[in-house]
Every structure is written in structure tokens, then in C-alpha cells.
Image 1 (cartoon, each protein chain N blue to C red):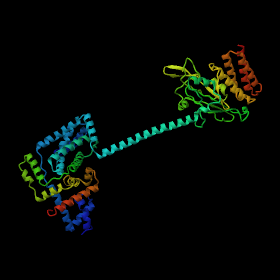
Image 2: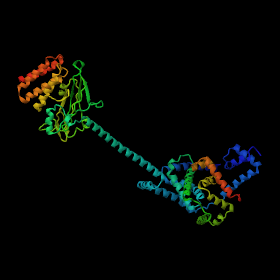
Image 3: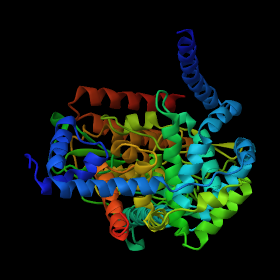
Image 4: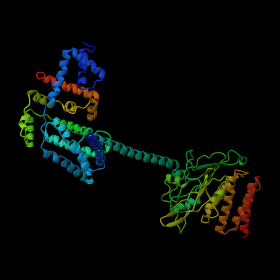
Length: 197
Length: 396
């Protein structure tokens, strides 16, 4: 009983702290903002990585997302989700980046790039992690071939598990467009993976 | 099979899978799935797809990477914050010139507006000057008089002034649009006949070129006093090259002052109101002499004041003869008291010039002659006063 109460207090304290951090960051306190970055850096990085399939690009985009978030904090309304604010910025940056780069990861580049990255991490079982079944590799390839807008909707739904409404807000599109893009993205994937599903 | 059909299920399958359907609809789907293997397979396909996508493993960067991530973000923020205002302005300036269709459109729009404004301004200025020039030309054309149409009786003053400079009369065309023109109607009881025509025209000489206008047929029984103010004079380009109408040996007259007359009493009051004022030119002040004229029937004659001692004898005699001729046509000219005054002043000035008493006696005799048939007591009284003044001068 005592332990539970402590946990509750701790959780409440954490939430309050985040609000305070945001307030302080809004006033220009960069160290408070740093605490917020620490909290969401991985999620944002992986979001960018799933979209770009490139560590360098994901690193740049994640950093830029946080920098932009810091400079746009004045328009951030208290009570809203800080993470939603950041991933909204991140997704827009990423889509623009992909459009600009006409980013398409070739089949040969992807495992190599990822292999290098994993080797950098120094993990012993890196090669094992890269061993995927055929379906996973195939689906990975097909996702990479989706247009950025379709890919963004699919990723936000599948990995972030956002509702249509949240996706629409993040990408500044209508709910109908979200549904349309999501269904078409799934149809494409289903069509190309018909033999595996 | 439940209420839901397979076609309906196809439409709702994604919404159901994503949890976007309400409870009631979801229940219908679930009921349908229990009985329809085909639709259940479709749903399973979606689940397999999502599972396969989620199985994609993202390589995790090293722990050092995460340690430095926040630091790099912080450093970048600090770096950008340190950017000076000048650097921001510079980058803004550079980005302004960076090709962008939107920027080009904005720049083209601004340039077009400016161009239209400039062309409009130039056209407006040109049109304004053109209108002003046309108006000036029209006025000058109206007022200017050819050489052969000079006044029948050029006053001695004019003759005198032409010695030192050019001097002619100005007779502005009386139009409804000229606010400078004031028409004063004489009292009806004092108008003897409709054929009597006297127009007294007052004019300021701006020394310089003053142009003569052939006398126009005057309005019957109308005492018309015209005045020209500085504005009008400027419009007529009279404010420049001003020469004295009456030569002042020691003091050059280079300015004009126009006296406004609105009196119904005629020339007497005009003379009383005659002003000698001055206008600053450079650092010096110059006295201003006014020169006025009466238009008697079709003849222009100099208007005299008692201060006009410099006027020559010929001019004075011309004034007398003109008025005498005018009165000779009218047995009881009591409606032109100004004429009596002019005759009196002319004789008075003639006496002062010649020191000849006969001038005064002649004047007294003439005024008495005019006084006798007068019936208007007021005019008679005024004329008597003038006669007495001349007699007093004679005695003195």
C-alpha cells in the first residue's frame, strides 16, 4: 500500500515536472528543454529512422525537430502533449526531406547501412538481428517504396498507433485523406505481399 | 450470416481493424466474422501485415550516441541563438534574392504598383501644368489688347510711365467665375436713364507690363468696380517685372498692392481707401503707389487722389476734359459724385502744380455750374463741400 502511494506521487510529480520544464523552456531555459529532449529523443529518432531508413538522416531530422520545437515553444499551448508537438514537427520535416531527396532506399543499400550502424553499436548479436524472415524483408522493401505521404500515415498508424484524428492533426490533412492514404498504402502492401500473407 | 453483408464489411474492415468504429458497429462486424470465413480471412491478412511490419527491427545506436544527442541539440540551439541580428538580417537579405516564384510574384506586384503610381503622378503633374498654362493663356488672350486697340484717351500717367517702362491697362474680363469682380448697383432712384453708362475700373499697376484691354460695352446703369488682388495678378503673371506706373525718382516701385473696393459710393470712397502699403523685397521696403482708372463711357481715365502731386498737367487736364464731356451729356448727373470729386482734385492739383489761381476759379465755377441743377441733397451737400474746399484753398 505504501509502495503504491509512493509510485502515484512520483508519477504525479513527473507530470508536473514536465509542465514546469515546458514553462521554463518557454522562457528560454535551455537546460529544462534538455530534460524534455532526453525524455523523447529515442521515440523521435526511431520515427525519423523508420521514415528515412538512414541513421544520418534520422539523426539530423531528430535534432532539427527538437531545435524547431524549442524555437516554436512560444506557440505551444499548455495542456497539450509535448510529444505530439514534437512528432508533428518531426513528421513534417521528414516528409519535406523525403520529397526533397526523392528518397528511395535501394534494396542493396538498406541492409548494408543498417549493418554498419549496428556494428557501430558494438552489439555481439547484430548479425542475428539482421536475419529476418522473407516476409519482413519484403515488407520493409515495399514500405520504402511507398510515397512519403502514404508512408507517413502507415508508420504513424502501425508503429505510433495514433488515431485517424491524431494523424490528421500531425500531418495537417483531413481525416478522410488519412483514411484514403492508409487504405491505399495497405492495399499496395497486400497486393505485393499476397503470396506471403 | 448476420445483418451485415460482405460488401459492407469490405468498406468497414479498415475502420474496424484500426478501432475507429463505435461499439454497435463493431459488434455487428464481430457477428459477421463469426459466420463469414472469407471476411475473417481478409481481417487476418491485415493483422498479418501489421505484425510483419512491426517485426521490422530498427538497429539501436550506441549508448554514446544518446549521451551526446542532447548535448548536440543544446549546442545547436545556443549557436543559433548567438547568431547576431546582423547575421539574421544578412541571411534574410540573401534569402530574399534567392530564387522563389512567390518572391518574384511579390516583387513584380510591388514593382507594378510603384510603376503605376509613378506614371500616374507624372501624368497628373503634366496635366495640371497643361491646364494651368491653357487657363493662363486664355486669360491673357482675353485681357491683352492689340496695339491698335489702345484706349482712345491714353492717360498722361500712362504716357509718363511708358518712358521708364511699359505700362498698359488691365481690364479683366468680367466672368462669373472671377471672384475678384464686384458689381455694385447704384440706387434705382439715382439712375436717370438707362443709357447712362459708367464703369469705374480700379486697377493696380504692377509697374511692369500692364496690358490694355479695349473697353467693352458696359452694363446699363451699373456701377461696376473691378478689383484685382494679388492672386489674380499672379495668375495673370503680373507680379514680375514690376515698374512704377508713376515714376518715383528716389524710390523704385517694384511691388504692387491691390486695393479692394466694395463701396457703393463710388470713386470718392475709392480714393479714401486707396492704400499705400509696402511689400518686403529682399531687405528693403518700397512704398507702393496705386494707380486706378475710371472707365467713363468708353474712355479710360486716370483716377486721382489729392496725393497725386506728381501727375503732370496734361493728365490733369485730360481728366477734367473727360469728365466735363461726360457731364455735358447728362444735365443732372447726380449719380456720379465721383466725377465731381475727380474734377475738384484735378483743379486742385493743377493749381498746386502751376500756382495759378485761375485754375481754382475755373474749378469753382464749373462745380457751381454742376451744383445748381442738383436735386439730391446728399450729392449737393458733398459737392458744396468740395467747392468750399477749393475756395478755402484759393483764400489760403
